[in-house]
Image (cartoon, rainbow, N blue to C red; front, side, top):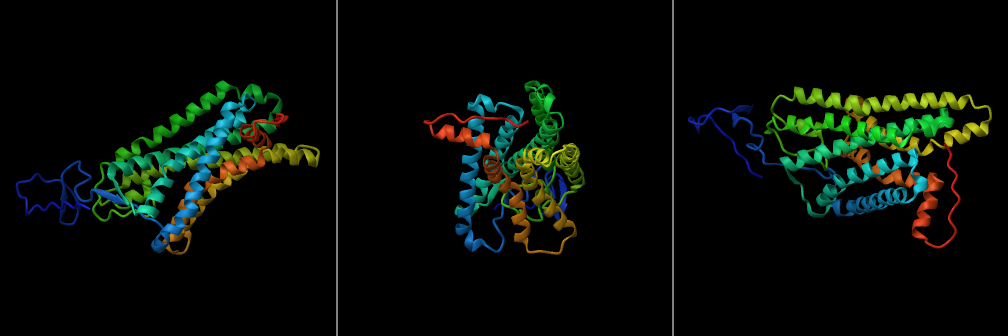
Length: 346
């Protein structure tokens, strides 16, 4: 780790930079003068068991790769699955896969090689992609909630409302919204200087974690970061709840109990995706603000659940709960045998 401390007394002829702490001056527009790297953290207190801990994490990574790639392949190859519900599922699988590729390898590098150093550029890049695909996933889950609302509340107009053109526009809107709020974050971080510490609390770079290490004013970063969270995942969660209120209202108007159960059964997989994505995040926020002081590995575990569990569990849930996906996967891997009859419930 390289340090570069600049003292006005030692270098009286050097131009004065911006102050980063008592007795420390940095050249203007330099974020690398105090620390040249960040250090990511494994699981605090369990460093001696990292090799053993890596086994379940490695297993989860391969399940994530196999599950999400299989779902995307099946939906791409089977024309009968190119309907809104499964197109949104393919988007979710792609987002899960990308999020995993920016989180799991870093963790496994820590567990296997004790590779903890990340340059500022690498850290900011990882942070950007993690938060970007996190927002993608949140928005896609919201789009899937809209899909379920239309399918249950307006079944006769389902195909005319959710056309391919509408789905393309939804996908474009998700990309534009996410990039609009996420692109400024790395640039706002580059204006900060870091001299208190360079040890991050998690196994990957996250925006709230990085700004805690800054000895510059982080007011703008904090306000913008809060705006990003509220305008993306916060708003998405409220709209998902509103969608399910409307869905529940429609379901309660169905006369037969069997009809209600059948309608709700089409939402089970999506409800699981909502719970897997939002529950760890909400629990972590509540613990940070209102909960008792807990060991650091509790917070790290909850953060890992938020980023690592949904990409693993989403394909499993959708394969288990969706007969159409199961049939097409069997058809993909078992070439012989009659083609399964598929009936879509929309």
